[in-house]
Length: 204
Length: 190
Image (cartoon, rainbow over all chains, first blue to last red):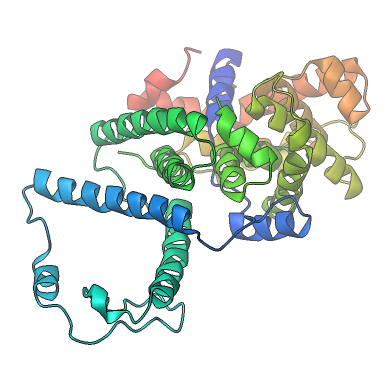
C-alpha cells in the first residue's frame, strides 16, 4: 500500500486543526476551583430594591409578551386551556409565601387583596425574584437547547440570535449596569453558544 | 474566532457568566490542543482544568494584541508542556521514533477520517507527536519548538520529517477507502 501523499496529509491536518471536540473540562468543577481562587467575584447585592423590581417586572413582561406573541403567530391559543381555567377562577385562598426553594410549582393567588401588608407583598416578590434569577441562570447555563431540525432552521435561529445580540449589546453600552438587559444578553449568548456547540457535534 | 469585548471585559472583572461563555466558546479548541499534546485522555483532562485556571488567572493581563483564542492557545500550549515536563512525559526527544511494527493499522475506525488522524497521532512517540502538533497544527516555527522543548531546530525538523512519514503510512488505507466512495472529494489527489 502506497503511503499517503504530503498534500493529502496536509488536508487531513487542516481538517484536524479546525475540528473541535467535546470539552475535557466541565464548568461545574472548574467554577469551584475558580471560586476558591477568588477569580469569580460574587454579585454584591442579592437583595432587590423597588427600582430593581421595576426592571425585573419589565423583563418578565417582555418575556411573557414574547411568549404570547409566539403562540399567536403559531396559531395557538394565547393561553393554554388549563391556564385559562385557573385564571378565570381566582383561588379564594390567601397567598402563602413559599417556605422552601423547591422547584415545584406553587399556586399564586391572583387577588392583590390577599396580602396583608406591603411588607408581606415585598417579601413574596423578593423570594419570587430570587427564584426567577436562579431559574434564568440555570436556563442560560443549560446546553439543552432544542436542536434545530435542519441546517436552514439552524441558520435562521443563529441569524435571529445575532440580531438580538446586536441590539442588546448596543443597549448594554448605553446602560451597562442594567440587570434586565444584562440578563437577556447573557441568555442570548448562552443559547447562541449552545446552538453552535450542537451544530458542531451534529450531522444532518 | 472573535470574542466580543463586552464578554471579555466582564470576564476580567470576575463575572461568572462571562467566564463561562469564554470557556464554552473556546474549550472545544483549547481542550483539543491539550489532548493532542498529551495523547492520553485522563492526563489531558487533569491538565485541561489547570490550563483553564491559568487562562483566567492571566486574563486581567490580556491586552487584546492578538485574538483571545490565539492568546489562550499559547497559554494552553505552554501550560501543557510545563505539566508534561512535571510528569516526565517529555523524555529523550532526540531518540528515534519506534519501529513501524509496533503500530497496528487494522484497529482504526475507517468511517471517520478525522478520528483516524487523531488516533494515528496517538501512535507517534511523545516527542514526535509534540513536534508534529506544534508545527503542523499549531503553526509554531522550528525555532519556537526548539525553545519550548529544549531541542535544536534541526532536531525539531528531523522529528517532524519522521512523524509525517509515519503518519502517511498509518493513514494510507484511508485514502484507499476514500477513492472507492463519495469521500473522494475530501482528499487531495495522490
